[in-house]
Image 1: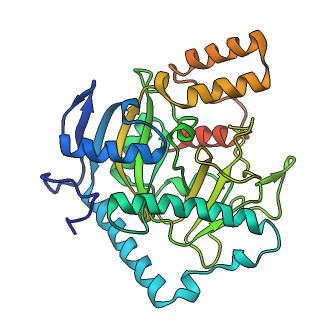
Image 2: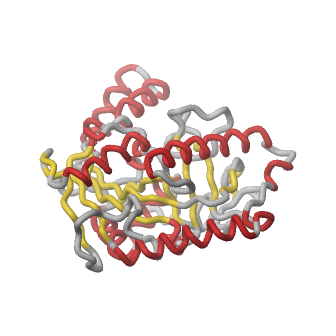
Amino acid sequence: MNEHWWRSPNTPSQDLLLIPVLKAGEKKHHVLYQKLASLVPLLGEKAEVIQQAYWINNPRLATQFEVFLDCITAKHSLNPSEFNSQGWKYATVDHDLKAEYTAKLNDHLTLASNLLNMSGVIPVVQGTRENAAHRIAKNGFGTLASLDPGWYGQGIYFTSKMAYAGTYSRPSKDGSLVFVISLAVPGNAFPITAPPYVGSHPNPQGYLGEPCHRGYQSHYTIVDVSGKVTNGHPLRTRPTNSSFDELVVFEPAQALPIFLVHANPGTFSLIPFFFFLLIHWWGGLNTFFFFFFFLFSSFYDRKPGSSTEPKTRVDQLKQRESTSP
């Protein structure tokens, strides 16, 4: 199995080994840095935003990931009617929009296959706390799915955009944003276009807290960022290259953490994006006040609010991280 792209070269087979790749702008491992530099553009950023990076060499998690990948590939081949359901194509509601969502995920899969030299695996990212990132590197994603119901299913959430993941990241002591870059196997992904709530009530057509849709192995949605970047409701128009997405997987072995990275929030592409939204929302002097408040506050590890009910997807994940073991 050592021929896989995610198996690091020339490293001992220890249970866990964080290999320095980049520190203070200095490359510590050129081969692994090239892997990182090739992945980051697929996540919507330039490699220059990364301040520190560590390769997560966890043979146990890698083996579990490879077994899952082999298993799901075999099942798709042997029983396509069960494991390749395309029932959404016959839906009368949001048929065209679901097709757009699926095409967007397929584009990402195609780009990833050219890099990884294999199909069915995509790079994804989570923004998180530094201590939570180390727990993920050691134990994988097994505890995450049970901590909250989840807006698009009770699973493990990822995105293909670092800028969107950055809204979930909590600054480390040096002010940098913390991310875990992973590889994921979406399998047959069910496109979700229904919002989790209608007003303040759960949407009966949504997937709030639901298990994976029968015949599929993941859920996929593209979130609305036209003035609602922290809302995360599904996009109602055709997605573009800058659209943010969420992938929900339901098995811990479906995703393999491979890099723990720190990124500079001052150069992050989400900053001008927030600036644009603030102009749209408030305009005038209020724009500059809130923009500089956001820059200032991003360098501190702010505590979650006292409210016990999360108001947005960002609030929900921050509350989940604060209560995780």
